[in-house]
Image (cartoon, rainbow, N blue to C red):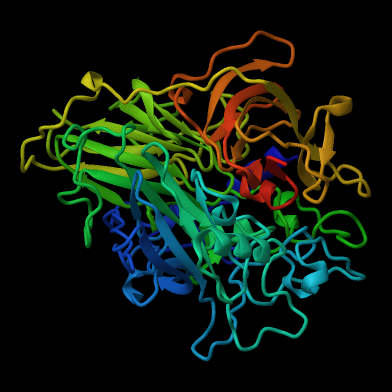
Amino acid sequence: MVTRRGFLRAGAGGVVLLTSRPVLRSGLMNPASIAKYVVPLPVPSVMPAASKEGPADRYVIGVRRLRLQILPPGSPATTVLGYGAVGRPRSFGSPALTMEARVGRPVRVKWVNELVDGRQRALPHPLPVDPTLHWANPPGGRARRDSRPAFTTTPGRYPGPVPIVTHLHGGHNFDHSDGHPEAWFLPAARDIPDGYATEGSQYADFAASFTDQHERSWSPGSAVFHYDNDQRAATMWFHDHTLGITRLNVYAGLAGFYLLRGGPGDLAPGLLPGPATASGAAGGQGVYEIPIVIQDRTFAADGSLFYPASRRQFDRFAGPYIPHSDISPIWNPEFYGTTMMVNGRTWPYLAVQPRRYRFRFLNGCNSRFLALKIVTNPLARRPASAALPFWQLGSDGGFLPAPIELGEILLAPAERADVIADFTGVRPGTELYLVNEAPDGPFRGQRAATPADPATTGQVLKFAVGPLTAPDRTVPPAELTLPTLTPFGTASVTRQVALLERASKSVAGVGPAVALLGTLEKGGTAKMWSDPITENPAVGATETWEIHNFTMDAHPIHVHEVPFQVVDRRPFHGSARPPETWERGFKDTVIAYPNQITRIKATFDRPGLFVWHCHILEHEDNEMMRPYRIGP
């Protein structure tokens, strides 16, 4: 048995050197042979609304299977899942078109599962679904949906229709519109097998609650969510959140930006670079505010997305699997792709001018942390010197108290950074590179850890500087005064929770079998998704949560529904230190480092059933997620 870190190193060492055409190893495309910086960065245009009349903007957004050109021209196309406006076929893509919203103006979305073929027959998942996890489990019917099934022999991948449910990450909404993992639904297909559940165990209750509040019912194969947009302007995103297969649905393409603008928490137009995303924009021409989602993927020789179909690809453990042990046959505890993808294209370039640009960065990776830096030489020894600083203005929950100059942006999965990159004074013809210096494996907070491969996953995006075509009248970031941020009051409750891993109980030396959340009882008591709720804030209560990380890795912890503030961190046996400068605004995802206590504070102002979880999606899908309820 090799260690997790040792196996990841061994896997990276097996890559074949660059040649003039893709070189295959074990059926996979060699990432070093994929051409870099030959296609412009796609700039997502705006999601078309069905209507903007009346008291809310209305959308009908479907999920479909698509064939897209993710790899460079001349390479095969890739099958993905994508969102788009129903009735507008060209609007479907991965990532999705950007949803633009205004503070105080609600948005109502009918989410439709359209994963069917031309004869209305359900399509199977393009990636391997492990049916031994505690997951949506449609074959279990009403009685055994949202459960961990029992098997007498080790099963293969689940072949049935795909459940979906969409979560607005960073939203502040009632629970019926949160995208709860047990509120999933299948497509309204004509061939759903007899006995299958077509919706999750929370779907009917949330549908009834939504109807009571909004006088609008849900229909089979869909759900209607209402977003109040009663919060600060912020960079948010939407993605699938189905119980036990979030990692697969997001990896397959179900993600997109949701940009909330206006209100007292925003800046006046003209102070920051703009305009924002524009229909048909390519290569960033004339667009100075750009949302940028960074994801890692691995491609098979035929251009298809590769995701492991066996646990052995994580640690070479070849069985026995469930039911002959407690190790799931397909689930991998983490996954790190070999190829970097930005806005749905591998290693693109962005043509920029000698002026300021606003980038809305999102780490959309399943497991990979990112340490982003702009350098002159993408192959330079790491850590490299930054050629151009970032000015970070905002994080998950909107603007920071003041702009911060940084040489590097650290982002865990699901975190966002609203930054200014100032190319003013950079000579036209210059080429700069956005690189990633976080490791090709678990992140532990060690800045000296081996960084990503400079030839592949250490490179992200090229900036090609051209001539200035129009004056830049925006305000230099150091001179900006950002909107006032009112901190939360004194906490009335301190709650202690734990991050845990459990090795196999039946096969010595194999682990983790599951990743877990829990309480601090008895030095850390693990709780499963199905255990009774242990986090139950009162409506209106301000609480401090102390997150004790007993594992060897850092975990990005996301609490649904509420923004929070990072209070401090401290080693298990040491002194507290304040949050990082870029964490001093409102957050919804926080890095909890190993062997440390991370403290956050939030006000729980809206009753309902929500969840909190690790946003390493492989962890979330196998028990590192817990329900919590606000109110009785």
